[in-house]
Every structure is written in C-alpha cells, then in structure tokens.
Image (tube, rainbow, N blue to C red):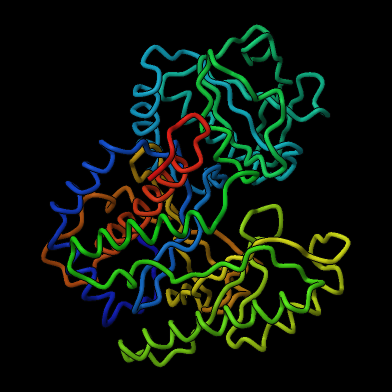
Amino acid sequence: MVPHLVTALAGPVNELEQRVLDSMPAIERWFRLEWMEHTPVFYSAVRVRNAGFKLASVETSLFPDGWNNLTTEMLPLAVQAAMAAIEKICPEARNLLLIPENRCESTSYLASVAQLARIFHRAGLNTRIGSIDPAIKKPTTLAWSGGESLLLEPVIRTRRRLGVKDFDPCTILLNNDLRAGAPGILEDIHEQYLLPPLHAGWAIRRRSRHAKCYEEVAKRLGKLLGVDPWLIYPLFDQWPGFSAGDEVGWTGLAGRIEALLLKIRRKYKEYGIKERPFVVLKADHASLATDLAVVREAKDIEGLRRELQAGKLASSEDGLCCDVLLQEGVLALERMNDAVAEPVVYTMDRHVVGGFYRVCTEAGAGEPGSRGAKFVPLAFEQGTHLPQFGMRPGVSGPNRFYMYGVVARLALLAASYELEATDPDAEAYE
C-alpha cells in the first residue's frame, strides 16, 4: 500500500520527473553500460531527500541494517537480487557466513540480521551467523519479542579461511561497518569471497570521496537528460584537519560555510526558491556522530563550538579533531501526519529491492536528526522499474518511487567509483 503523504512536487522536480519518465529507455541503457564497466557494491541503503524543488541522496550506507523494515511483498525482489549477485561472484556457492556488528544487542538490529539471513537462505544458500566479537566465545542464542531468535556463533580462523564449527563457507557477508578498523581475523583471506571488501569500511571510507563521485555521476546523468545536475546532488565542500582547539580552524570553517551558503543562495535565486538555505556539517568518517550540526549562517557554528567544549562529542587532547564535510542541506518536504518522511532506498547488486519512509516526529524539514524515527514501507514492489506512463508527475506513487530508485542507483554507482578509488589491489583510479 502506498502511504498517504503530503508531498511537495512542484517546479523543477515536477519537470525533472517528467524528463526522467520520458527518458526512461536512455536512463536504463546508461546504467546498463555503467555496470558493464563498474562493479556494483554488494548492497546499500541510500537516504533520499525530496525538497519539492530538488531530489538528492544525502547519505549512503554500504553495510545497511534495517532489513526488517522491508515488507513481505518486497522480499522476492531481494531474494532474486541476492541470487543474481551471488551467481556473478561464485556460481557454485553453497554456504554463506553472515558477520554482524559486535555487541549486537538492539532488538531492531537483531531482527534486521535475521531478515538478511532469511533472504540468503531463500536464495539457496546455507546461512549461518558468525561473530568476531571477542566476547562471544560459544554459540549464543539471542531472542527478542515475538518469539524470534537467532544463533550467534564464534568465528573460527584456520589458515586463510573463516568459518564456524562444522561450517566452511565460500562466501562471507559483512554487516559490520569496521569503523574501528579491520580486525586481523578478516585480513589476508584469499580463498573465500569477502563482501563488501575491507576497504568499504569506515576506517578507510570518507564521505567527501563519495560526494565527489556522486557529483561526477550526477553531472553525467544531468547531461544525458539535459537538466541542471544540481537538482539531483547536494553541493559540498571539505575542511580537512579541523581541530576544535584551534582558533584558526574555526575561522577557516566559518569561511568555508559562508562560501558554500553563497553558492546555494545563488541556486535558490536562479530557481526562485524562497526557502532559507542551510549546510549540514558531518564528520568525514563515521567514527563520530553522523551529523555534527545544521548551520544556516556561518556565525551559527558558535553553538557547535560550545557543544564540543562541553565534551558532547569524541575528542582528542585539543578537542574534536577530524576532517569535516560541509554538505548542502536538502529539505524534506514530504509529510506523514505532520512528521518529516525521508525515503530510504535499499539496493542489492545493481537492483533496487525495496525501501521505507524514515518518519521523524521530532525533526523539522531541515533537520537531519533521527530522534523519534519510525519506519513506514515504500511500495517499491509496484513502482521500482514500472512507472505509470501517462500519469501526471507528482500524482502517481510509482512514478515518484521510480525517481527515488534512479537517485538511489546514482548513489550506488558513486559508491562503486568510490571503492575503485580505494581498492588496494587495483591500479590507480583515474
């Protein structure tokens, strides 16, 4: 069922949707040719924001949880995509070992892991769940409400292979983002397929690199469609080596914020947008909070400074020290019962397999916070690749879902570029 939403599709996005629908064959051919040259990341979750005048990806996870929020109707898509992905990697695959986050105590995360295991079981793989958490020393059954449970087994390393007792997998699926770095037990595995690769972990990955790759593919698609690529990607900048204890660092950050806000204001003026622009500050890697602050004027960073001095975020001796991504804030004007509704699109291999609305009851249209979030399914089983031709843009749910799928696949393609750039076994990325 398509959830009832108050959606602001007007002006540029309305025109963009029509252009996308009219260009569907060209778009699908473009993606098809891209996937001939680039390997899709194994799976992802892409947060999309619809501002009415702009539709863009704002965050891409390469170790997605939340699989439990996909509806039963979506599961066949995920199972088929899992079959296709595994067949490309190892056609003779029989056993799969799923490695979750350490200290996976959240019931919602446990439900997500259980759903992911079911997907691969239905794809024809014997699936076991193995933990690299040093605290897990024996098989442990974790249960949660509703009578569900899963068996977590300690991972065993023998020479160059990983497994659990009496189980030797040919494929290892990581659902652990490795933000603390890759543990030795996962390194130098050459006789098994490790998905995603270690360099997809947050110890190596950077949001600024993804943003650059996303800008590149958005500009290429924009040229194909004959539209302004700004309509599908957020402007961004980076302030490297920022230290909260350095006065020069704060001055430089304020200058970068003001310069980015000026670029956004020019775009708003070009399209007659009356909204107030803003910038989201994010740590360039994910060892810290995803969103450091929402800034509408350069002077607003003083509030962030006070939070850092109060020790709210992880710090070094001189206070917070990290590279900072400055990302154009994209409004979320879709509403469900007066709450912000942000689409999250799930992919596996090169396919959109489902998604849901992340409904934030305590966040405003411009705020990226997740407090009070709940999840309402998207009807991708109806609209991923079958938009309703002849329907006016903004009216047909499946048309909008197709748009979300295009933007999500752009982010997926950008992630492929990103991993190629950091692959330690590949030639220099050009």
